[in-house]
Length: 337
Image (cartoon, rainbow, N blue to C red):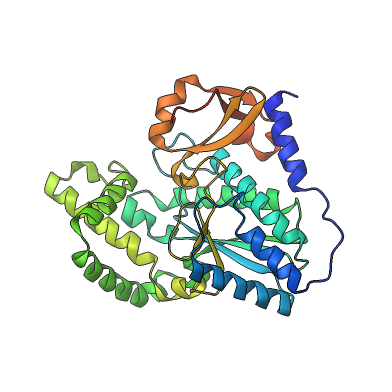
């Protein structure tokens, strides 16, 4: 077994090690849980006072009612079409889960009912917004579920990993969602009209990044003016799906502990790995080798292009997970900042 395979095996062994004997849950344990949830070892930005208050309330409720602590993570539910790992889950998702479950493990260890982590997917809108055929989203989410099953087996008694889709889990189908979506769409359009030009430009740039111009439909044939309209419409679609009524109720303010790679008003931002904040569905997973140290990272497409030629593939020892995991890309030395 080579050094990188030993490293991965050790990380998984640590994650799946037996828990210490259960302790009675009391007020002191609530403070311990709060410290683990807001641990500086994992989070990359401060937790706002209002968010901290919400977390304490949720911890108190979970302890009193002897139920799992519920964490949620909202994501696109797709693999970016430009990535070399498109359309399936690969090392970027593996390293994200390794990081997030390492964060959750000490919480589960001192809370006998365990933890649940629910990933809410907005994939229902991707074909319309990004021009990527729906079948690719199905391939991605199927492969992501396989990873969930692998990691859940490490400590199934105290961990629930779940993929929740706006359709069909929150709405039976697109027709049932239509009225709520149109209401959200009108709110988003009104808000975008009032948004400062600089902020709108950033959102439009992200929308352009996500569009596959030569995808399901031949959008690459559009003239420049039509392209701009398409970019703007794609932005509206993407923002609207996040504001449909049942999606907002799914993890309404104060109902769950919200996790994400980067900060927003009431979440705990713990990055994607210890060294990365790039979203896992728009990035590429690699390992930096610094001497005898290995550092999982998720790189943006531009970062990946800069170092692609320096990567070497090393056997991972995880062939059982499928061809995508038989070898892992390793970067000798540190990534240039």
